[in-house]
Length: 335
Image (cartoon, rainbow, N blue to C red):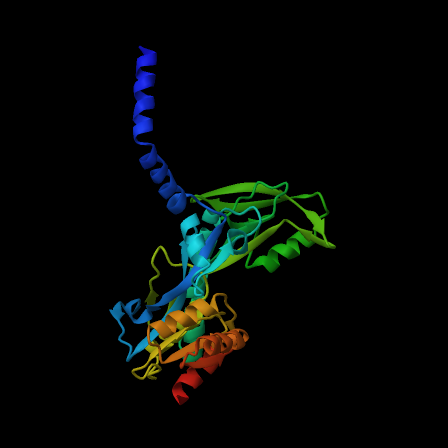
């Protein structure tokens, strides 16, 4: 009986061999994963759709939008296409994550960066507008953890170290500095909504005492008037900070920054209004031009790169370099 079924199965395979090979080829080309992703020109997020002032949507006279990069899964088929399209670049996954970090953890880290960016944008915009804002709580979340003798885990929220409340990574460093190499620190952390106590060993590297963590500080901010800026679950990273702060400033001040224009830009923002460099300028600028932007705002440290891209692609778009929120506002007012 077994031989009979085997012979029947063999016959089916032989009769459909071409179809089976074709199907397996399609699966390989389109679904098999590779150690790469592909960066492609993105679009922009219109921030006028995201901001409310005292629960009322605030209209912007024009567009203030944050540019983004599109990331495509690099199946073998798309890897091949990337060599034929100069707007597509093959990027190793190792370039977008820490050593030993999973892509899932890297994505979670970038989402926390977006939360941090939103709170920074509120603080910077209200400071520039001369309106009150208050940090009511700060979450100190572990976004990098060195392999070592520790009970800490990624995305633990550190509340106390050796019984002392912490305010930032510097306050942890001061406590670590009082310990001897090999000592264990006791930390209280929030993990999955539970407050627990864990230990981590102090070690030395390049003459410094460490416990091997990096933190993302996410502030909870109250403002007057009340501002809400909503990000979608698939949006992440800190590079929209500049444009978010400009949009908030436009919403709470009497100034009209957009003046009917489509302004797209990129750049991180610090609570004091400092604008920081970002990656992916090429793809963001191409996306801005594709969406017929009048102005592209870019951090000072990315300006030369943006000018080179514009020259290579023969783009006719006004590119403005800024190093702070104050400077960006001044530039848009004078244009």
